[in-house]
Image (cartoon, rainbow, N blue to C red; front, side, top):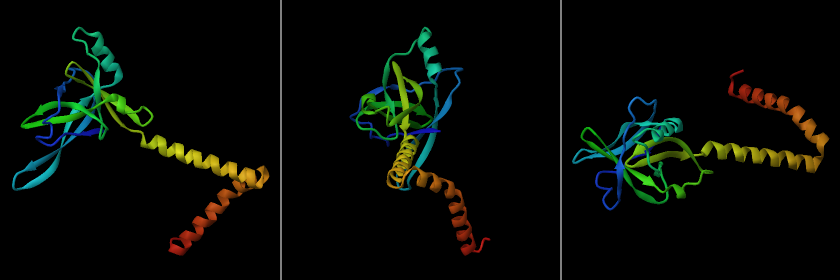
Length: 185
């Protein structure tokens, strides 16, 4: 589930309001979780979760074709960003949610992945999250390529092949020895 953080009450002072978050009637949507820190004077503070609809690219394309249309992208919603462009708001009961909007140009597509879209004001917002898994798997792959290249260069292709053939037996012997020491086997 995608999530973003709303500003505390009063933190929106000095920022430009870019519009109201709005929904699209009858359109299929996923859920966006908006977390807001709520402070009760004399009692403390806590995090309250609210939900908003999160639409796909297809739904936003259909909205742009309709009569009411949808303007250009006005920014991105993220957990954290570099430059705050302004904020969008949404009234849910007694709570006014002010969500910071970040400049799209400050969020590289290599580091951020689009999760969905939200209509807001005269345009729409991209909801993005960091590509952590992509970079973890890429670094594991790079380390694996380095290790295989090093073994092949240092000991030759035949030694590398023998090492790869013996690897499952070596791993199973190590696991068996470890489980025996722990008293499991």
